[in-house]
Image (cartoon, rainbow over all chains, first blue to last red):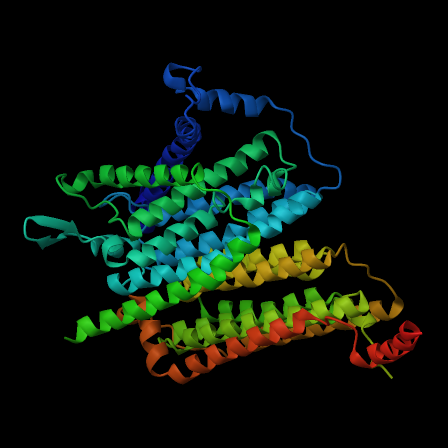
Length: 341
Length: 100
Length: 187
């Protein structure tokens, strides 16, 4: 047994497994409390208190929610495809969690440094489309099917602009590895007494805006949440789901939001870089930026009205895609020009 | 590491499964999927030899094969959808208007 | 360790591709094909082709198969119906040919007709796989790259034209109807 542990490959696998379990537990805990934060923020934006009965300031609300969901009756519709019906919620959560394997939370705190980390994130977001499509199809319900097809069409359309907007960052960092991208955002510009951090949000503002808009569309959150809109399509693709399976979809949505915020922080907001703190405490800056971005997600949801489906598709294809392409062209030109001087 | 013959055997088996799929199935969409299996078997052979000859040309070729496969799938599915509108079926032995 | 991983992924690949051609429901076939592509992407990663492996997931498993699923759901296909004597004959011949191909492949490999070099890869060629692929793609293979973009444009235009279908009835059928209609309206 000890001899087996000497093999460097086995050691790598063991420590990776430990980190994976830590990330899993921490992220699931954060997601559970994100539901509470969403309701609190929604409440205060709508000038009402939000949940405040269970525990001080309603802090134990997630436990009450989980207990309720566990005890609810769970039923499967008559003509539903049994296997796909049960597999779809799992597919909603798994790709989002897998993306966390390549996100650098701190200087030495990541599961593995794949040299194509950005592509891993794009691959996982491509696989996330299946959960919604299969949920809509296997429910044997017109509203669910419509919602599922609409949301998967929306997701694959906005994936293009998402990927293209990251190419600008890729050109400036010179590598697909997320660790290298965070290292490229080290340091600051000095303009006299002011110091502007070397983050890509300042050198690639258009790409940042496009990425953020596509992030809203990818996670099916307002203003792009027509496929699951309560007032439009009953429940959209999760109409027929109840109890724990619905909870898994809910979990998947918040997990997706968390993952895409983490990637945005890594790509555009400097990852774990930050002033005044030593490098080893970089993960505090990471979490600070992460929660700021999540607050932005929730703020936008309760502020903007919902986009109609044709407006949504037209916006993705006719506005975001050309702007993303122009951004790639402009960044390429500037990088070459600066590199040749 | 991984012996060359294992990889080639895998590629050959995958290709054979694709061929059998094309010959045995009636559904045009499943036949299309078997064609994709054959293309992927060829891709695997390319990547294998790219690794064993220490050159990246094989991977470039795989890149182009994937692009062509994507274009072909799009057009093939459009044709199948159109045939379905006309004949109400996707079974290839029922689409026999030109048969003598 | 690595050969063990390869055997595991190869087993998943073979089993799921067999299930693609054997299963009756086209949706299940498509999903097994997605699984097969993901296993193949894992094998590419084992062969140090990281860029190609992940592009395989993004393009094949993430886009092409979604397109397949869309079409299957749009056509609302149920379980495949099989039957007929000619069908059995065709199937028998198909499986026979498959067995012949497998036997041929095994024979060739047993006779050692695929030696090939077994040297470990050059470290410079392995590090920075994407950069190396990019350098090669935009220098030696620039012309095929540009032609590929034209190919994709042609495919896009073709798909839109083909999938649009017919809008109204053909003009030959509409003309007699018009001529028959107008005297009636005038009178």
